[in-house]
Image 1 (cartoon, rainbow, N blue to C red):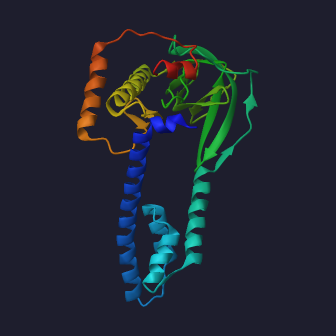
Image 2: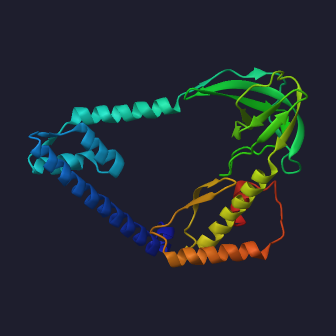
Image 3: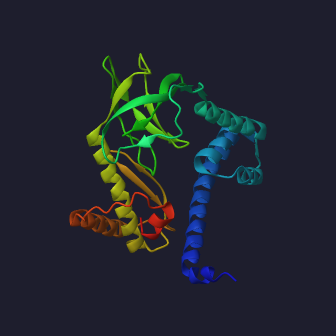
Length: 294
């Protein structure tokens, strides 16, 4: 009924084996730490492991709270579960507060449905602000600007957005980041122009753009090399591409060996030195790109 499972039997068995080994390592680490906590608790004359200690085992080391209870009970102590729940709720509250953002309504100057991206053809463009809003997060205020057209690449595909500046006759304002949201390219600045209705020259930092583009290409070369060295089961699970560094996340059932890493490195460098000519297919869908091996 599921022939693909039979075809991937060896891979599935290896993945299960590695997951089991990983859990056993976590279990061994947690038991050693828990033994120390139990010993300390007894020396202090207490009957309960503190909620803080139990939460640290759970949150930092991935040790299940029910397993902590079971082992502690076997050694004659309990766990302060109400205090553990308080620690858990406190962490959730910290996460909520860290993510809290106060966003004003958009101030619309020019009605547009989407930003026109011109950044493949040029890194400078005459623009007008179509809408803007103020955003406050963690006590810091920034402004989000949407232009009628823009050469700035918005954060997408793992590649961080462009930086640069906008300039009018009276002022120059740095663009510190560029994001994408609901079909709009959003430019982040730390100040609002004195006259938002003015016309501006938008300028992308060319060195940062080229460095980020190079690293973006390298992630695709790395993906191809990993599939060749480790197997076709390797799939991209995420990436981070900046002008300075790149990170490529991928699926694999065990730790990559130094020899395999070296082989991947050789393949990627070989492809870079080959200096293949550029073939652009800007209108290709995500599915078409994947089918082509991107």
